[in-house]
Length: 169
Ligand SMILES: CC(C)(COP(=O)(O)OP(=O)(O)OC[C@H]1O[C@@H](n2cnc3c(N)ncnc32)[C@H](O)[C@@H]1OP(=O)(O)O)[C@@H](O)C(=O)NCCC(=O)NCCS
Image 1 (cartoon, helix red, strand yellow):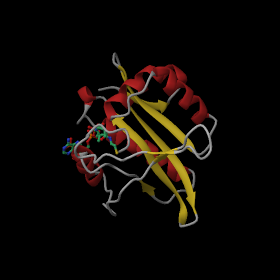
Image 2 (cartoon, helix red, strand yellow):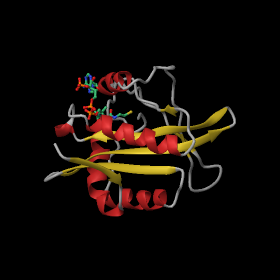
Image 3 (cartoon, protein in one colour):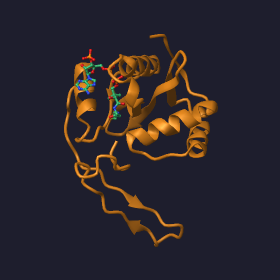
């Protein structure tokens, strides 16, 4: 299969939105285009797409550089998905490999990511690609209202019961 990995452009927004929706984050092309445009102005972020001849974009990865007080500069895989019809063909591996190379070229010595516990394929994938399971943790979120002081708490849903919960990558 002929595949190319390249930087995403705003023209890829519809394909990225479809794949984001498969990942469990229902998204419109317009929303993804807006986000992509914001990310394209950041030297700490890369969004790469995998393109297959006669098929177009069939996967994407977002990798971001993070600097924390608690640790040295590292990269985080903020999103990775391959089209349902194209899995187990090495596309995820190629996207991850190129994201790692991008991060290494920016001085990162480690790549991290969070993956919801219900994602069994992702678990097998990352373990097979040399990643170690460091820990399992809870994710908390709180929505901020439009007016200060009117913030609303959001109750996280257990991701095992909501496998497509947008709150669990
Ligand atoms: C995880 C994901 C990106 C993997 O992409 P992919 O293109 O299918 O992965 P690859 O073909 O490169 O797989 C490489 C290896 O990972 C392992 N692997 C991948 N999918 C697997 C599965 N469903 N079950 C067991 N092992 C799996 C295998 O060892 C595989 O090698 P093999 O096919 O030679 O046995 C893809 O399954 C996906 O998009 N899943 C839904 C979204 C998701 O969970 N993203 C990760 C969020 S953190």
